[in-house]
Image 1 (cartoon, rainbow, N blue to C red):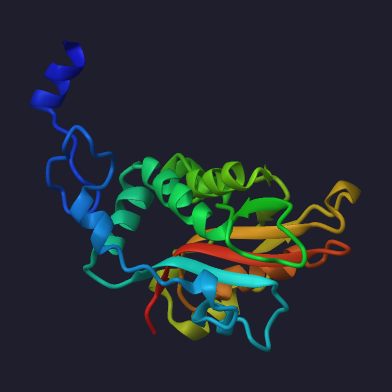
Image 2: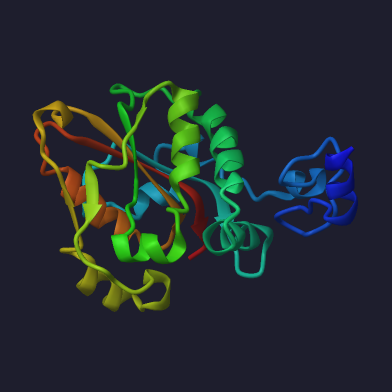
Length: 227
């Protein structure tokens, strides 16, 4: 009865279009789920996400679940996840994407899921890392470890999306570092992030992790911005 009254006066709405959800729907309405711009990058080993890192770092795999377009459904989802506290969106996208990852045939399967870390100051401001639930859903679905303490951010920086390409590349090289404990040697790390744009942040994270002996890197993002 109490839940009924809550839903009556404060109905749950779709995180994509804000229409009231049916009792059978959760987080996203059926229409938004059908309208999601899926990349299908996991089926193409030479996809556009992989090309972001050509000649920069050696990676085993890179992909993104969705295309990110300004003023589109995906932008609304990421905004609600990143700034409105709707962490359940990350879980939904992670559970969705894990089914695609189960189709991947890799010579070296993933060992550990690692989120792009926030600086402690940024974490305190926001209260959470927006990629945590996404990463945990992938780790759980793939039955591998989720670890947010191997990679860390040394310097506080402004949001990368508000900088131009040159500004991103110049400022981000020395922001991240990793703990090179023996238990982390010879691992295949799957780095997760929200939106892949230039790839500068993920490249910097990868370089930090590649200092660990025997490390291999793959990348998975919720979305990728169209060039």
